Length: 68
Length: 301
Image (cartoon, rainbow over all chains, first blue to last red; front, side, top):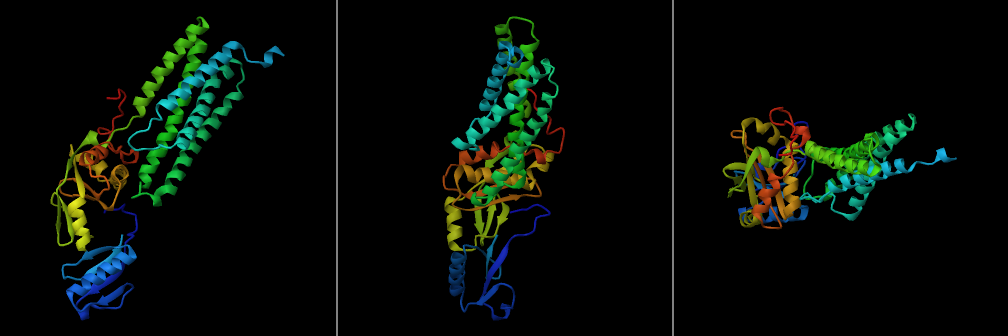
């Protein structure tokens, strides 16, 4: 959704779930490694449900849980 | 002692003007599709403030006729009262922002608050003109009262049409949009909307129950209004308010052709109602920029 030009972006990345170890970097959000695609999907859904957040899947297959 | 009491004529003028002014406020307080104010307490508050506005308009002429020029300064109290009505509405709606399906947005709240303020002026002006007409016509009192009522009705009609704004349906076509989901991204009529549908559940929910409309501006310059964030937020708010919102609501503008997408997963599945409510969403005064677009509609067509 768009926003007014002066409005600060109000989204927050809550978790990043990846299946590639080298993409697990330290950051403000929780970054988790999953050993398979199936596990990463399950982890994402569980976290999103618990945090009442939205999920986006990146082109590389990783998941990002965020609140907009 | 006799001079301390109002004459029968003055009482007739004031009572007639107050009644017509209050009725004018009640008439324009109708519950519309926006469902606001749709509660008994909301009605009561606005009828009472309308009554006070009418009373202030009604006594102005008898006060001047009685050479009581100091009393006329209470008109400043009227202005203050109307400003307070606007402030009250603004605060009340702002307090509700976090409890709604989506935000009304500051622009829409400002528009609603201005409307409520102006409606009090309508009650005030109507009562003033009724009072003036009855006082200046040199005929029988009952004839004067009837003339005052006729003038009052004419003034209300004029002001109602003068303050009547335009809606999205006046400057754009609203059509149903086709929803597509590709790799967690949502598209409506080929316009990218969001990529927040990353889970199978989200995808399934939107595919099965999602609804979308696309707004096509009639002229290119109407995009100035429709692209405005506050305007799109108002349309989205009205959509969620009318149909409910199960999950997800998005608005997106298409830079190339100026189309605007409103999409959501509603509780009530009624695409015709969605189209209608977006069409009837008022064009916000704060987004009005072009004189050719926003020529005030004096005839109320």
